[in-house]
Structures are given as structure tokens and as C-alpha cells.
Image: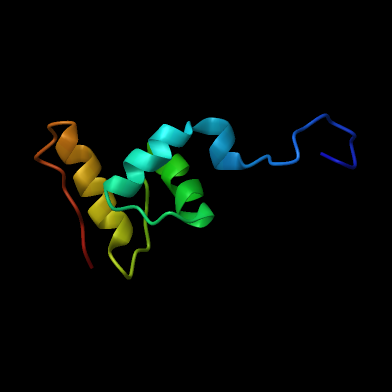
Length: 82
């Protein structure tokens, strides 16, 4: 953006552009870690058109999605483990 001289704010973030701060706070209460990498991945999961493929060795994302979908009354969420 700098090379092309496209106007932008100094504090630009991918996740901050696509989601509100209140959504990040809600995600945090649902179990998503509060770091920029997790927020970016949360945007991909919630705003993407396809289902997410997650490599989640610590089960943080898995727990977050289950908690998020429980609030949406989707009790029949299917999680595939290998």
C-alpha cells in the first residue's frame, strides 16, 4: 500500500477492518485467545464462504467454535477428529 501510495491508516489490521472490537471481545469470552493471529483466523472462520479446515493441536479453536455455535442453537455441530 505504501509503494502504491494508497491512503491508509497507520494502525490498519486485517481483522480490525472486517470485524468490530465488540466481536473480538465476544470471541474472547467464547474461548478464542486474544492475540492478532487468532483474531485473523477468527475472521476467516466467521466471514469465509466455506467451512474452515483447522489444524488445532491445543484445541482452542475447536472449543471456541463449539461455544460460538452453541449460542446459535446449533447443538448438532459435527467435529471430525483424526
